[in-house]
Picture 1 (cartoon, rainbow, N blue to C red):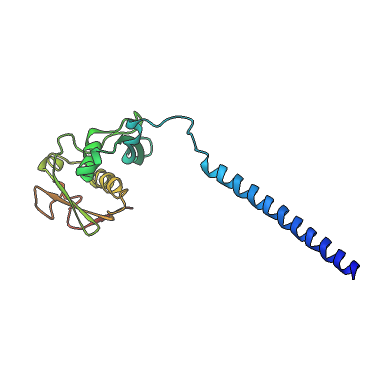
Picture 2 (tube, helix red, strand yellow):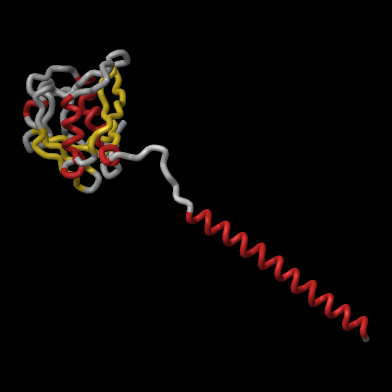
Length: 187
């Protein structure tokens, strides 16, 4: 009977020691996890207020070597895109590229009357200057339109573009190479 009591006491002591060890490991593990959570990430370089306001837009201009459109990524103040993002992108196209290897193809005196989105179609109303005195040929005229279409369809809400001239539909370039009688999509 003494042996049974001795075995029982030793077993109880071993169980208590095991429970103490397990509790110790659980406590240390929880303590280390809390220390990891409390650590704060410090960036290597602080981001300035001006950098926070910057966004990158993609504009399409003519590459004279390949005679195709080429993208130009441009960093601009995102506040410029808040009120009229579509008009702002078209104005940047009219101003021309910053890259010296690309050419502006939107006519110089082009003005924007309005740019409004309905569903996923952007209706761009341009002034008569966009088409006046332009006898560029169908290929050049198509590149001008693709430049605008590719640029504005970079925005997720726009999939198609319709062109108006001073509020009128179905106008076109004077040589009748390209008529704005359809909705244009990105190619």
